Image (tube, rainbow, N blue to C red; front, side):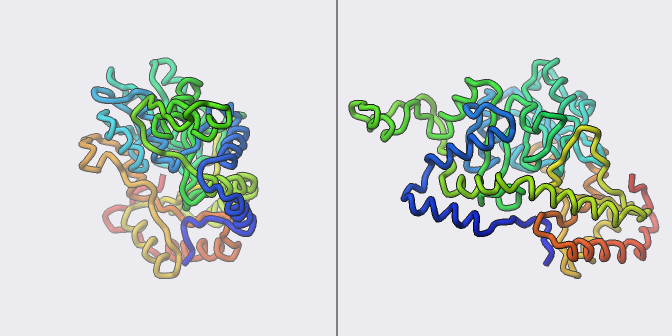
Length: 389
């Protein structure tokens, strides 16, 4: 099966893990701190304001908590989104308010966000769909104008930028994912950046049970009396990562440019392969100054029936595809009656093709061949020719 997602790991990562084993220190330690510093440098951030976590979802929950979002607040986020983002909002007692997206790019514009703002809006939470930065710069400006907090879910955009600014650095808080389906992987894991140093300090405290003091070993080294005593400054969870994951992440971070370059080449091969296909819409071109992580490559068919038939054709021929992400405004638990035509159209006609750095040129060519073979001969549904937009 040609997979949609697949990590690239090898001897370098194994050797890094072996070094951790040899050190006999597997928990959070020096390698975790080194990984945080290296990641901060890559993003152009102060290392003191970057904190590793055990997952991006936990970082989202933490972000909502750090911004004091709760009952009577609303958070605007695009409906084309991962459930973890909406769960983080709803679990706080706040109300997720879903906004529409551009039907081709699947990211919200500043106008989509503005249309969903109310007097109760406390924050906006944006996703960079497929690694494309989207309208994040204008959305950040909109949030500043209204005195609203901005959270960037940068799970798909670890190497995405607008000009010299990395995605994740536009908002009050940015979070990243290193799970097994991402570009930079640690098995599970995440990272959080807070623009406010005070919030960053709270994040570091709240990822480890709200303990106000350094570890017992650190206090013992500084000649503290009864170094085993603790001071609980907040009621918090244990959300830390460890040196095993950090060792893998440090190697993956060094390889990130190589990974993204390969993904860019695959996206260009798809663009070329579908360039003359009248019924296949490709991702919109990136605006000048935008750089993408190329996490997803998606095509759009004229109608949902043809999209579904293509997905089944590809699966029967050994190619796994999907649609990311299911529309959250249709999830009963979030109690939204929103009418979002752009998101609904995109969900009906969009299909994400395999895109990962381990794909061979032959596999990419086979995906293109199978898509073209089917779409060039598949007749449109009699009642819904539609428009690929």
